[in-house]
Image (cartoon, rainbow over all chains, first blue to last red; front, side):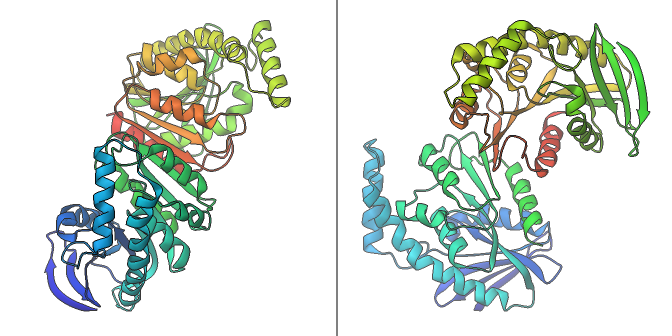
Length: 241
Length: 241
């Protein structure tokens, strides 16, 4: 892990960009150390997502959490995958035509992403937990929900996850969802234009954990109300001790 | 409104029993006055419900809210209705037999209750708001959800409602739900033995308000997690200004 830039934000949060095995990322740390860590999931494209990510990181830092994120495979400045681009084009075509999105398109789009991204998140976790300013338990917050599910199953260092049910989930991941045993809070945007509400409810039902809460709010994909940031902090306060 | 008993609880909350037109009720007020008011809905039977009601009232008082509740028609020490007892017996019989509960049973059980209870809650509100220790906006919190729906539609002094989707809702109330425009937070117990999950989701969808949030948690009817008490206080803090 190599830090490539560093700036102090006006609320005292230290923001550092880093690169790890060719994967760019950002780490935000609050004043007090060692801080518990929240991994910030997102749909890819760090530059485009930066305003929302830094807002979430500052919100978490105000409660004493460090936050970190990495770029997804095939997004931002990282090399594109021809197969993923083809799957994305097929998805867009189906959505434009108002057709149901075939399972095989979702599989082609999401499964390779999960396979590639999860080891990178775990490698980032290795490096982050080796820093003296990071300590204590780890949470995962955000989309891509399929990545969150896989991480929750395979990564024992993640103690709780706040998952955003706002993206397509391959059928195979429903089976993995049954194996999740850590506490979950699941966010659902009731009128999410690019998301199947019933599928999200079925997924919530499928999670194997006993401690799971669904928060459904009105509005579209990007309309998650601001108070859910506070609700997320309180969820992590209960579980990242 | 006539106060019939008064005691100071150990956390300084003043608990007073009252009677109003033959309807018994309880009022809890915090130290500071005038306090905004939360009406505590419940399934009937003040004596049986007292431990849970006083816990909710103390939790609200800790955030500066007064809380009040009244007995439901046909519950506690109030005269029984033969028609309601018959409907309740028919409901129990259907549930014991594992049969779907016919709409007409739900209508016979719930519609007369709503018709009788809502004017009593409104009369209680008149009397409570005339007290110097009560001031500012009013919220409704709890079941019976059909009573909460009707109150939210007809009572302009109620500014926000936290509804517990844990009881049968007549089809006619779905139409009224579309007319609700105040902010709502709806609690759903995912595995509520006496409640139809899909019906509760349909009801949440039907509410006409733009600001509505569903909190679904695991477990049965009485298993609402303690942290939902805090979440309820924060919901009211946003809307009872």
